Length: 144
Length: 144
DNA sequence: GGTCTAGGTGGGATATTGTGGGAGATATCG
DNA sequence: CGATATCTCCCACAATATCCCACCTAGACC
Image (tube, chains in turn blue, green, purple, yellow):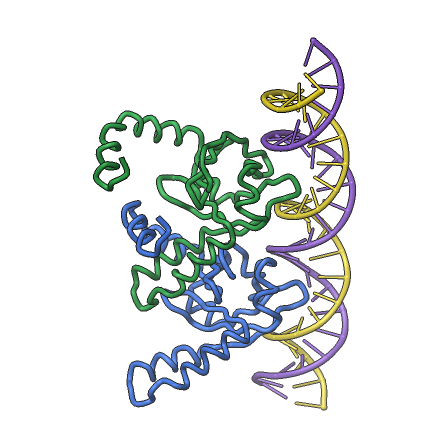
């Protein structure tokens, strides 16, 4: 299970290290694509295949699903981890997520999200959860 | 059942001892995450998996639950107990709970909470004073 | 009261990880 | 077709995490 978050550098060769903890879970080949909220999604090849299948099963007549499918597929990029566990980020994706140098890698169960540091800070501050709302959600899912 | 509380040191290598009493209940692998009121939650792997499953089952189209899931997962950290029963606390979590050196480990049924000593004092003092009102609540829910 | 044991704490040595850069291979363009 | 830019693979280094062992204190037991 992919959890936690790490701050890594995107170097001038547009490489970024996948935290070593996650490498065994992701495998050697991954797919990077544009995600929600100005972040990139990284899937293991296996997870990606599941998603691709789901996307292809969506109705083509619905305008929304058609555009969502295009959004996911057109920006998808498959890349291998190099010998020390880094992946490549294309210019388009770099630009999409507005990543300059520092990036935040976030573990989200079965996928990894990549954010620019600034966007991540903004996002997590903006969603500055009051203790009450967190407590409420926690009790909803049966933790408290 | 995890009950009672212990005061242990968080050393410079960001390790903290789990009370030996609790080790058999928690198992070798645990997950630490940000909790409520400036405290950290420690779950056994089993308990955590239940939570993670619930989280992943939440609808991802809802912006609120998405941010809640990110909050829970991005601050989570899975760690093994070392040969003498200590776990690691990441810088992020250390900062979140404002733990410097002395920390209080509190048994809360199925999870452990970790507080900085100062926060714990503050919190428990405030609570002791209102013991009467707590007693009232307990009778409301049929405990006493 | 002394000895023994278990649990908590600290520190050193080694392995791992993240990051940068070079050289050869490949593609691009005039 | 040659020159130049880009990409890919490989190696090197510094920082840090991980593993292991040793100490120390407090309580138990004789």
